[in-house]
Length: 328
Image 1 (tube, rainbow, N blue to C red):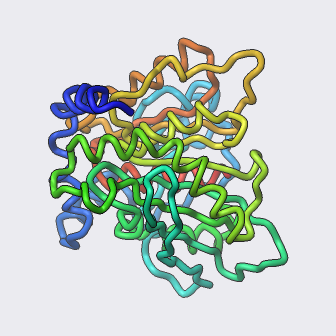
Image 2 (image 1 turned 135 degrees about the vertical axis):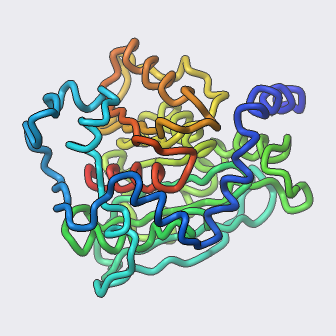
């Protein structure tokens, strides 16, 4: 992208995303306040988990699924999307997958790039696995999802039979080494996201397909992300509907070309499009809901829910990841 476009986008997102850097720093610090925040969301440890099959009337106050899946109401969140995050993120005595950092060469960036790759328990070269590309937020790298214990989530949903074993790819959407900065919101970091569409499809996906036993079929391929990565997942997914069958976005950042959020009679319809955000997110505000509204106006079938009292924070993003995995 041209430098003037990068500067223009930085100006657009700077005000809205100013707090992201500080928010992300919290992910790497374990403290009691985080657990208290999760409990305030109403996750009761003794509450039975919701299965992959969605009941028609799980509680009297819940709307029918056709309404509830986009209502944004607290009652429908509790009926269809609420999960005990502690139960999913804690390390249990179950078969473990492997999370490993590897490197690949990116012709788009012009250097070696790091990527974190999760392979499920019992990973075998005799079968092809679905693959999920899981994107982080601006100013972070692929390890952000590991800091939120995404590997534990994957181990647990697979062990409980709630999701199909899959390979998960967490790339690092960062500038070239000589352009990196300590500022989360910088022209260099924004430019990295602008280039990532080409890097993903031209460099990373071919690397994964040639080095791991993953299916290269559209029906087995998913993309999801949080914040700036949530915006990017919508961009990538809708730009390449012939490649992605699952598109998910959690607390998506601004700057997306919303003309992409449509399906034509020639488009390949994704099996699942899922968006979510927190009701108390003062960082991206109502940007994610704006994307939801555009999808609704364009008659694109999708799931949209709001996490009660959720901020621009890990509980919203883990909730989105879990609800995606349970529907893959």
